[in-house]
Each structure stands twice: as C-alpha cells, then as structure tokens.
Image 1: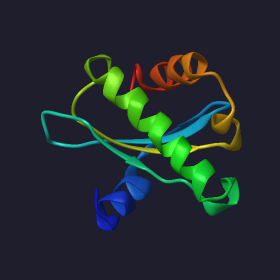
Image 2: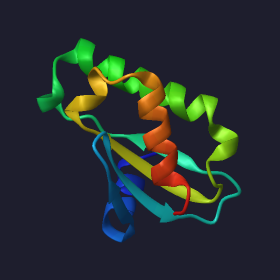
Image 3: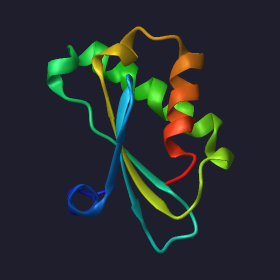
Image 4: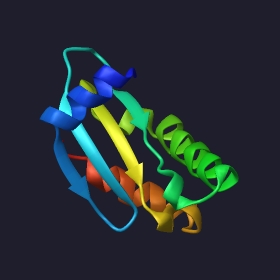
Amino acid sequence: MRKSEFDAVYNTAKRRSNAYFTVFVRANELPLSRFGFSIKKALGGAVVRNRMRRRLREMVRCHREEIPAGWDIVIHPKRSVAKAPFAALTAEFLRLLKSP
C-alpha cells in the first residue's frame, strides 16, 4: 500500500485494539484484502522491528483464507508482540478481524 492509501485508511477506517495490536479496517472495492504494517521506532531497534514485521506477515500468509475479503487493513503492533507466543498473537489477530 502507498502512503496515500494508508492515509485514506486512517481517515475513514474503524479502529479496533487489544493487548497486541491496533487495527484500522476500511472497506475497499477489491476482491481481496490488502494489508499494511506500521511499526514505530519507539518499539525497538531495527532487529526487533523487523522481527515483528516478519511475524505479522507470517500470520497473514498462514491465515489468508480465514480473513474476510474486500478490506484495507493497517496493523500497528504494540510492544508485547515482540515476546508474545506466536499462537497467542495469531488467535488475537484473527479475533480482531472476524467481523470488520
């Protein structure tokens, strides 16, 4: 997603949060869902942020068919993502996205 698409999501999206993520969800007119990840520098150094990004991409890749189509989704992880068990992250992520 481009910066203008991120801005559109932030301006018109619904926001949901839990202990691990803040997720911005906005309907699009496409037959698939698009994902963006925004990881602040305050969450850690490059190694930590890249690890978070890899974990988030893997969650999306493994559960693509369970995620509803037709949405632009921007994910902001919280500091707890870096050390949380992958199964717990996945469960909470899917719970947030079940009913956009």
